[in-house]
Image (tube, rainbow, N blue to C red; front, side, top):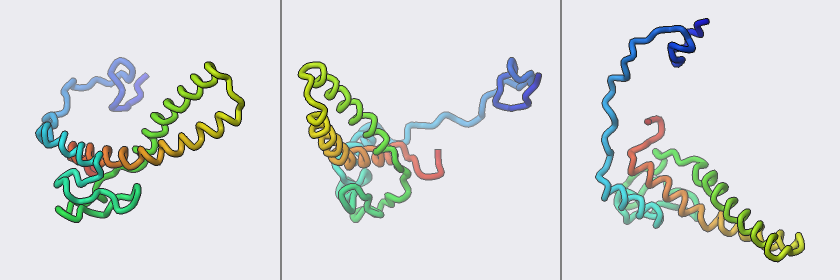
Length: 150
């Protein structure tokens, strides 16, 4: 039975295609590797990935609207909740591993886990959020990704 969907393969949809791939050329490397690496280092440091002198953040984890030195518009980048999602996975894995290790090694009371892991989770998340947001924006800059563009 034919589904008529153009994304289905001929073997499942019964529709034959020409077998040609898209005529678009593969994407070239947007920036030289040295420039990309420098932009990422500057982003991690909380500086503008384009010039390295302007501040990336207006507050503790709030982006500035644009670079004060070169004028790069930071609002054009779509970092969204990527940094928070990434940190949930990383910090959660580290805290879970440490909590399991402590439980198996010492078997402390439940309140020791609460007093130890809740503040440590909060501290790690807040401390790493600025670094993660700077890194993600710098990666988007290095790849020349902008909102509404692939």
